[in-house]
Image (cartoon, rainbow, N blue to C red; front, top):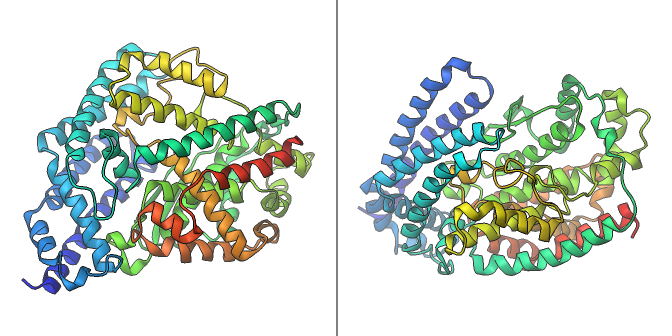
Length: 511
């Protein structure tokens, strides 16, 4: 078979697989938003059948044969060509999937399902001891998987794995290694803790009670839709729906959906949750449609994806210019805000206070929560920490980094669902997203001028076009680190993020 014929076979086969996977995405969206209560059992069977089919296709021997026919040919001589990018990613995915024994895949899927279900019930009743055997099983199987992946070759051009944990991290942030991650986090920790000390010592305490007034759900939805349209989210190619746990999901070109949740006594969750998911959706809507179903048309990593959501939630959505534009409209939607001054509202939505719960953390303290999780994960995989000792280690790190410590398990070691789902290596991408966001934003401002002034005038198109041209359009052509360096001229760094926080919070807290 000629390289051209083999590559055509790959394109047809992988796109057909992507169509099947997109039906799974549609079913997943429905299950988390619209499904009747009694439909879950049948949906679980549907999803299991689809998962088996997708796994069979992912490990089909013909994929390996087609890849071998293309590799080394003139089609992939340029490592950044569309064909080379696709073949690189398809090869790594094929080898990773094929290396995991079916027995392990089935056991891990079952253990994750059982652990997540038990966690949902155990967390409210603070049942760490009951949850521990489930977590122990998930961790053991995940470590077995990581050790298998650790033995595989890395993608061409990627650095070798330094330790077993890197094989999991690589699945979420391609090319990233713990040896590079730890110095970034060390630089970040030092800067954040110094900034936090100055904020807490400033004597200013914003009035956050104004965020807990009456905010009717219908008014929140109407205001959220107005913000989505203004920022550039294509509502004819997506939709906004309520859910228990907000998410964005891409069904395919022309169908990128977001969800949010509303609390009638809390402003932030519905509005900033919507802006966050919109950032993810703008990325998906901006990917090159002609490459859909191939890596060239896919987001490059969770960290870059998170950079887009954090940009719109925080760097845009919590800026003074944004609210100079939209606060008058917010007062029209919410009569409870009519006696509130813009400056007081802006301070409230940017209030800083160390807390126990990651998802409720402010911009300054959020990444310290992630640092705790990263260090604990590394200790677990290095054999330096036993699972039964996690609660004590968790509390110790919270005291050291945030000056607070949990009094129970549900607000401590059990607060996140990630570990019960086997998502070790995932947490660092949240912080990487914040760092990438600040770096991209700084460069955009250098090239586009005063972005906050543009937001004040309701002009978002120039910035959105810049992100689409420089980030979205590239798909998975570049590894995250290479993309950051290509766009900004410098490798990933904590400095732009720390500089952004320093400037913003010095003005807010007057130190």
